[in-house]
Structures are given as C-alpha cells and as structure tokens.
Length: 321
Image (cartoon, rainbow, N blue to C red):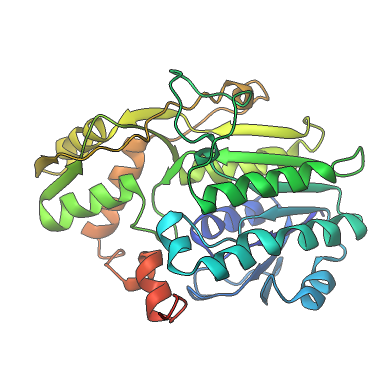
C-alpha cells in the first residue's frame, strides 16, 4: 500500500483530496495545524492525522518517515491572507520549505508534488500562458512560490521525482469550504444577496474545479514515472463578466459593473498536463450548481472560517500594529 504524506491536508484542497486518495486504497498521513478544524476529515483506518506545525522540524522529520510520496499543500494562502502577517507567511511559505524537502529526500521519499500557483507568471501580454514563459510574480506570496519551485528543482534526481503543479483559481465545494475565491465569491453573493458586484469585468481568469485539482494530484501519484517539472492546471479561461452572467442564469440576480483598473488578466495553457493522459471531468458550472445546492439544502452557511482573512483575524494570526 502506497503511503502518502500530505501537508495542509485539512484545508480546502486537502479536504477534497484526502477522501479521494483513501478511496483509491492509499494510506494517507495528514500533517496540519488544524486551524480550520479536524472534523473536515472523516475517520478512516487508513488515515493518520498529525496536528503539527511545519516549523516544528523534529516532529516533521519524525512524521515523514516511511512514506512513498509527499504532496505539499500547506501555506498561508493567497495575497490578502499573506499580507495580514508577512512574517508568518514567510516562515510557513518559504522558510519551512527546504527543510521539508530535505527531510523527504533523506528519508527515501521517492516523489514530491508541490502545489505552486499560476500567479507566478504575473502579467502577460501573450494570449495563452504556458510553462516555458518567464516568471514575473507581483507579490511576496507569488515570489515565494517561485523561490520554492527553484529549491525543489535543486533536489530532483532519478530517485526523487519532483512535480510542480501551477493551479488556476480553484472553485467548487469541499468539506473545508472557502468563499473567498472568485467563482465561490460570486455564487455566494448571487444566492445570498441577489446581487453581484464585478470590478472591471473584462479581466480573464483561469479556473479549475476542486475535484479536478484533486484528481490531478492522484494522477501523478498513480503515474510516478511522469517527467519531473512544471504543469499548469486550469481548463476554463473566463472573464469576470462571463462568470457573472453564467451565475445569473442559474440564480436570478443583478450584476453591477464597477470601474476598476486591474491588470491581472491571462489565459492558462494546460496542454502539457493533458498530454500526460489527464482529462478534466468538471466545469465551472458544476461548481456554481453544487454550491447553490449546498445552500438550498442547508449544508452550507456562511462561517468566518470560510474566509481565510476573517479566520486569521479571529485566531489573532494577523500582525498587531
């Protein structure tokens, strides 16, 4: 039985990924601070949960032993969350990374998969952004993603396969829900406020359904001999206005356009990933429909923990100036 070690496994993506890996017969260890709660992961005989901090090197090294693969999801996610506490963001997102990679390689882990971000490309004039293009990160969050990619590549070898996934903006429902991502935000506003405010509207955003992102990690675990390197992961490039109109067809609401200059606009080319044999099964419309259904059935209600910035402030993880 292949043993998978997942950092941040109780987060948004992790809470979707872990059940899928368990269904496929893997043994999974989740290493997570559990600041959003452990209840998002249902008990399973093949699931080992460790409440741990990436900065606790002795516990991290002890925990990572006897695993075949590492999937590194843990981070202070997205720019607003990172900017709440840059010191904490650097400690978690960058400083903790190389020790983790070393512990993995020194303990004979054969595969390391890193969840980077498509934001590493910055602003691009090209119509489609592929993995060969220059990296021009705009924020410390994105810059540290680039730094971690470079660190990981230094340790790549025939016995240590390194895979870097650059996901688009994730959407859809998961046990540890997030409502601070664009499709999820707009769907939430449409359902609960009957009004969507779009700033700008023409900006193109690449998107990926959370279930497909989980399947991508499973795809590389199943095929460990795929070449090391970078893989874009995003399949629907849509403008914010297109997203709003798509939601409006499902949930009657007003769409209001607010003027705002936002240079971030790009289309993600994921053909390299598709050539490995992966194909997406879900679309943005599926995310819209499932979030709407969860609201209708009472499974989804607004909580502070669904908004990373709000939750960090509640836990007093922000800078106190």
